[in-house]
Length: 310
Image (tube, rainbow, N blue to C red):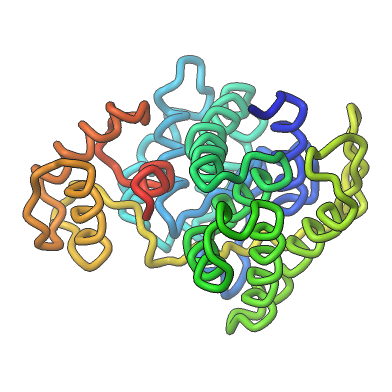
């Protein structure tokens, strides 16, 4: 069980990677040419392209006292449809930036990133036997930034499971594998993200598996009072194919829907794995979410996918 200090340290490290600040920048709106995530926003830079920005803004708009809920509400359908024209919609970007100063938005982001990224990441790490704070931070980074599942499978194919190889050894190989993946990526933005793995490798080499304070990451000294650093590179490594799946018109279909159906069948839900997201899939998904303590909205976002092993 991680302590509150270990949890906040892990989150601060990823905040540094995403926004250059250990506290995170709730108002930051970023658009980098060539970033598969497209428009990114907030403390941990959630993306338009993944559908997660829709989930965050939807959550914020439903909160009492949200000062920018009314002007943001009309954008929800476009966010749900991943309307990439929002990348350059100046009015929308300004609204996001201004909303970042709202304490309700900050509360919404804290709760959202904990619910959608941190809690599933710790659960996924625990299932693999990765219980130390540094390993949890590394899994959290992969979940927030993208590509965790692919890199997990790549590492396991090379060295076996953490139970077989040893948790620390497995984690070190994962760091090396993900660094190699970054370094050889066709997206030049992601090549620059090797610094994330270099930072984790340095902590592992120092033997700081408990994330004992103080620690320094990319020039930021993390203790009770954290400092800011220069520009970070928040390019998303999340595969654009990992879209948020939901009941929509026209019906969403494809191999990702079929994989979701197959995962639900493995959990005991009777479904026809036809690759089409219909009412029966939404019903099964809501039941699964309730059973596992996830918000039962019938939307297969990152938390649900992680709990299903996708």
